Length: 288
Image 1 (cartoon, rainbow, N blue to C red):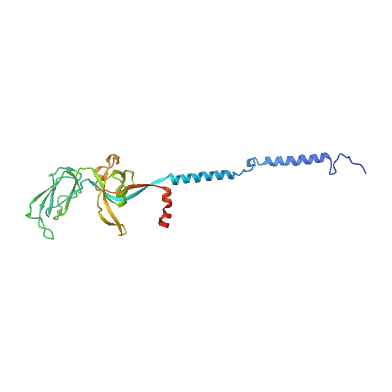
Image 2 (image 1 turned 60 degrees about the vertical axis):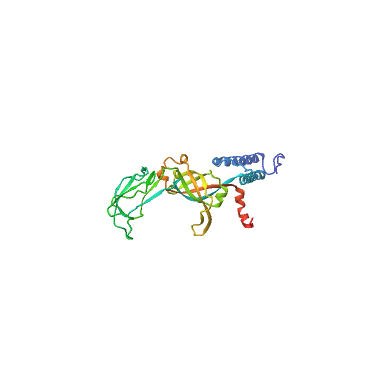
């Protein structure tokens, strides 16, 4: 039996313990360096609740400011027809007969009294009408009733026409206007001179189909009660004249393209706050 060194721990020698310590430490180092592509491990620090509160408060304040200061334009949309200021004149055949010669072409500018068509009178139509005091075989000279531009010139030599049948349309060389009907709301709230936007029906999907106009006048009295697309009465309407602004219209749109076109007119009525729009359902619900 031998006495052990009092400096040696009971669990083994100092060398053994130091060896075990070195082995455990070196193993961890090797393991930490075995997968460097995983990156370093770090603890995520959560965002402070105060940051969330501040962000929510700022967002709420911005939303409130947008609803209070933000606004939109209330508009009324109507359909309009573009014509010269004094309208157009459609010339009807004074007799029943046959076109023998066409002296003018579609789109041509003519003076009052210019011969447009020549026709030979014939026996009356199925109703016996051929024109008063017009013997058969008489050559009739159809002249322009005013200065203007010819439209709807579809007649050709050899065409037979009846008494009162339309021969052509002549439009005076005047500024173009859009004729439409507006509601009492527009008459009460929109002043003459207001700028309006027209979208030509035939060019609805093209940017060049947009035309700018100015509200020139609204009739004093109503046109009468009209019906909507469902056939229900939609109230009284007033005749409105909108002057087309050629300087604000696309240059590609010639006068011939505008004349006779139908257009969708958007008339600005008033500006409203966004919060007023948001409160509309409550007003309706409570009858305010």
